[in-house]
Length: 499
Ligand code: ZN
Image (cartoon, rainbow, N blue to C red; front, top):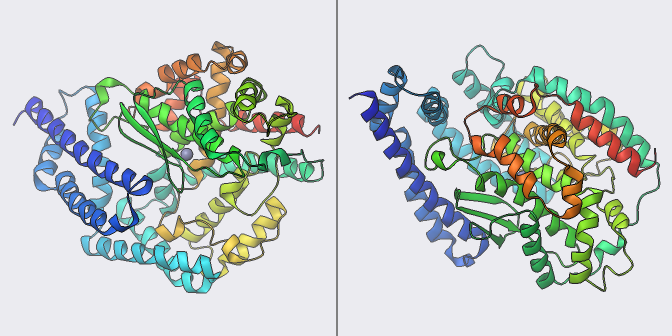
């Protein structure tokens, strides 16, 4: 075997893996958008069969041999090819560090825990979930030690979801954020709230569907390559850069829910639609991390979608589609309504300003949990105290408290911080973009193409070639800093609430 033929073989494997992922992705998409309920068993069986073949293909002997050979003989490989190999090998390294029997046991625990969590949430019964959570945390701690012995387990977990992230960096980021946002929210809580009652009138779903199509056009999402479907929870998935699907969910009494879902998922979609052609079917295709992906979705949803300029440019469209409901409503009133900041209990319904505090609570708690400083039995109490301290709200029960998210029940510790990081990346990216583009004017004109073009040049086309931190530095000409996000939130909300 020589390097060139080994690399060609590796590419063939990547292509085949991609084909399996394509099939699995399509089946999944169909199952949550249009498959009849009775189809579930057959779908699970097919997905199981395809997944096990995919696992074999990814981790099997033939592939491992080729990958090891290439890693040892990478002299003739380009920077991009080396990175491609590294990306491909990332999951394998983790998997192969864990004894197989323990991994199987853990998988069984996860699938059981998800059900236990669901029931516990429904019945507001934390004690029934606690033993599972204890085991899940224990496994995650141990697996992190297998994977990177000698490192702090929570650091290892953070890096798995957002490579390069560590407790030290996250502490600094969240510390700065907390110091400026907590006092701001306290001041807003006693200020006069905007009137958003017009948003809960009835907005026919057929018209909302039309609004989605208009939004996709405004965002310059190519409808030949991106479809829109409906599912319980909005999401975006990509099969390749010419086939991206996003979904939304329509509520007659809350048109803004779907509107912002479409803009948010549209941001994810744009990232995938504008990747580099040459990376197709390789491990470099697609968004680099959860944090960078969220930077795009949140940039469109919040920094653009919830801006005064966007509300102004969208108003004629809203008046055309919903003449009765929007009659007498001004763009300024819309702007104020979609930016109403109210400390609340539930993360997924939180507004742009209070959202990061929900993440900080989870970050501090899971760090203590994995670090062995907090016992599972004390978790609800610690949760409630932090909600009181940071958001000023009393948590009435665990269902609306510590049990609200599915992440921990699914064994995911270290995942939450990337949501908040994404918003901060987005603010820093926009700060740079504004030096080169008339950002606000473009939004006001309803022409987002130059913005998408700029993001393609500086973010999208690189796929997974650079790690998140490198990508930010390359795009912004300086290292990541929370400053831009904090300034953005402070300026916006101080002005909104006349503080
Ligand atoms: Zn998202």
